Length: 128
Image 1 (cartoon, rainbow, N blue to C red):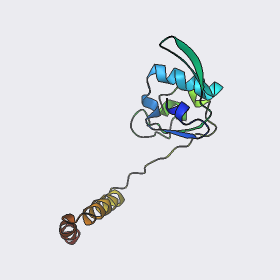
Image 2 (cartoon, rainbow, N blue to C red):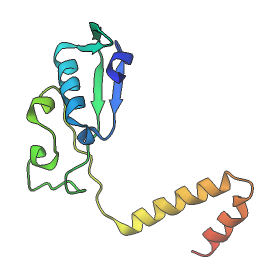
Image 3 (cartoon, rainbow, N blue to C red):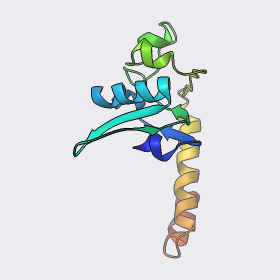
């Protein structure tokens, strides 16, 4: 239903790799023919799904392995991947110190935005 609702717009799909086989079949049809065929309650019709699709998927092992190909990193059939004009890899380079700074900033920002949390945020920043 998301691609039909996004007709003449953009559909953003997260966890693209977690889709079940029925959804993969539907999305393949939609990306190929820009329509989705449905048959419900004795009504058979085709709905327009003319939209751009931006999808995000996770690597099979939780982290992208640059020593193997893109196809080996994601659990998606080539028939669906070939429907995309552009495939991009976003990698998280592990840096514990930087990750700690970012996490502390996010927590402190969140705590400061709540009246009861501003004192706790100050105490947390002073203890570091």
